[in-house]
Image 1: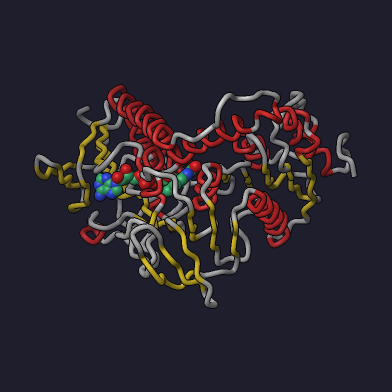
Image 2: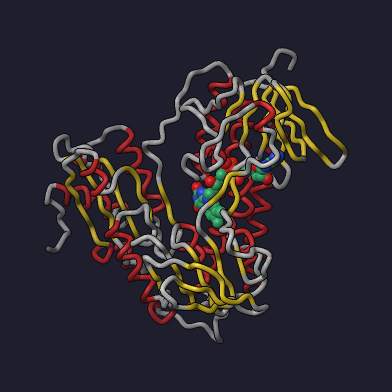
Length: 464
Ligand code: FAD
């Protein structure tokens, strides 16, 4: 490895570990400094644990739907929360160990400790054995983020949960107040409502899932309502009236109070930039504390890059990994710019939600003449066959060019299906090209084909 470029990466989440493996594949001499568990938030406190729990409650839901599907189960079907949590931990461990194996296979060195910039071309790792100084031609900061904490909540109280502590619960709460009806709040609400928890969600914006299409969010709210989840929009919690050992009472603006066994605060994230030596080199951050980068993922300091959540772009695992690949190209002499125009957004609730590109309103705001095509899953054979016919597929196209510019979807497997539209938007495919592609029957994918036909008013199966 004599003349190999030395790359030190601080943080081994999906940004850092993907960058590390790619850089090693390209012949670099790579060291990752990770203070906790490989896989970061995604494998240990985010994507994978939440989806594992969702997998459990989906199975539970199906098991309870026996009368619809035509079977009966002797005895009562009850969740085994301890086993669900164990299963979630086992899945995370399998994946984490897999990253460790990939590190070994690719000769990525792992230093377990707290990393910080210590001067030009120097990273210090504070480990249990002492402090190590690592020489780096290039440093990539990939330290991620953690749950944002509102100052007027006492997070030391056992009744106040973040997404991290909610994943460590040992018992199912009877009641749960969720502050923030964004993606994370809705995913937890989906899990716990299937487990029998009575949930109230408080959201200050006028719609839940504020970044999604408003029609979709409204329909989704109706589905939550049917499940017994109460969603209070344009509502703010403005303090806590009581922290007790077994409940919490929150004050709602306007005088109302809500009492619940636990309160989950899911109001966003904050960057992990404390104690990582940004001042030592003068690395600039923005007003919210995220590290400023250009489209090559370079910070203002030469040979220091920042990828993933810590740069405050789009806080998703697949974006962190993509940015890792872009940064590595540039560390090794390339000149690649990140392109975040087509990023699938997936929400793993019951039913799932997915979107990519522009919503109809955004398209209009950007000067397009949007036309849409929709197909309801209630008319899709596969959706009926698997007993998941709630939802729809909507495609948004530009009337002038017929190009696909976005899609919104709600229903089974839409978090997989969305990639077809991502490919279409990224490559400028027309609705005609998507619709003329033969889609297998019966699949949820053929509902997408019908939605494409519907853009031209030609869906065979739409009954209007
Ligand atoms: P992280 O994953 O946060 O990793 C950063 C790593 O750096 C951590 O391991 C940390 O220990 C380490 N670190 C920090 N500081 C130091 C230091 N000084 N020295 C050494 N190591 C350090 N995204 C999706 O795309 N899909 C999902 O379904 C999804 N679900 C989510 C569910 C929840 C509940 C949460 C909280 C997040 C979810 N996300 C999801 C977001 C996703 O987890 C993050 O966007 C992603 O993990 C960011 O990757 P990263 O590598 O930038 O940072």
